[in-house]
Length: 129
Image 1 (cartoon, rainbow, N blue to C red):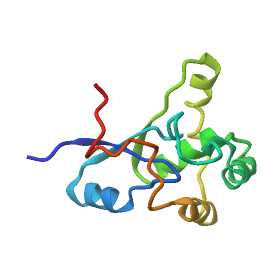
Image 2 (cartoon, rainbow, N blue to C red):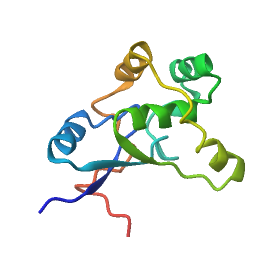
Image 3 (spheres, rainbow, N blue to C red):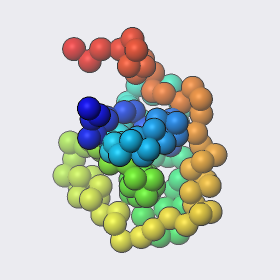
Image 4 (tube, helix red, strand yellow):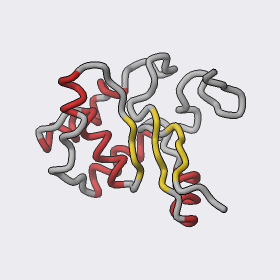
């Protein structure tokens, strides 16, 4: 038996292309945790402050967060954004009224990094509890 859903770290800096291809081949839904990277990220700048992502979002009048969520859903993933702020939670639901084009998707492709995993989040060695 195979799982219906597999929850993995996935964000613009760690896109899990091989894992997602396996999921698609086997009919498994990719559920992405930390779509905006975790607070303890290794990367110098927050993904929400990435100028390339912000420029893509500006084309559609959307925030970087909304643009990232749209990107993930267009790839067939199911993102799980987290926020304790009501306004951000509402914003995170408002990304279904636009679609990224091939040029936009290419911007995201260039952001992927082999070492883009958030700090200390390797599931082979990390335990939440």
